[in-house]
Length: 110
Image (cartoon, rainbow, N blue to C red; front, side, top):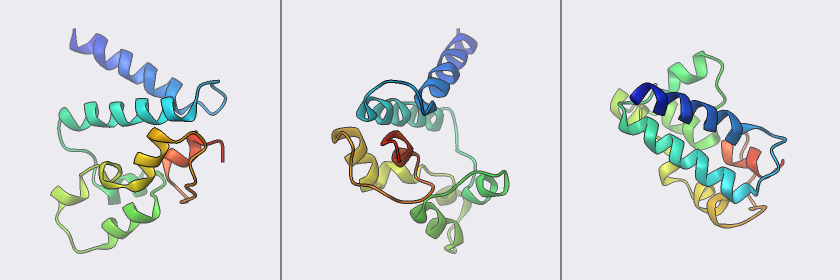
């Protein structure tokens, strides 16, 4: 059952991140947030430095956490849970957020 759940969440994640999917940006943001929560519940996330080294884009806030002298426990947390961009994206269609590397900006069509 867990494998089916993982496959479902992976497929949903692919749809959520699709730039051409005709869905409201608020819905995409909420689905992305739900996927992040589910992923974090299964264990610690990849540290931000490892994400960047693997070619991932970090937003300005994630980059600040990455370069700060913080432990791996903090580096493996989902910064989006504390970010105002997430709250705006989940509640406002075409939200006024512009940070480079922010996944929620992609949902706004920018």
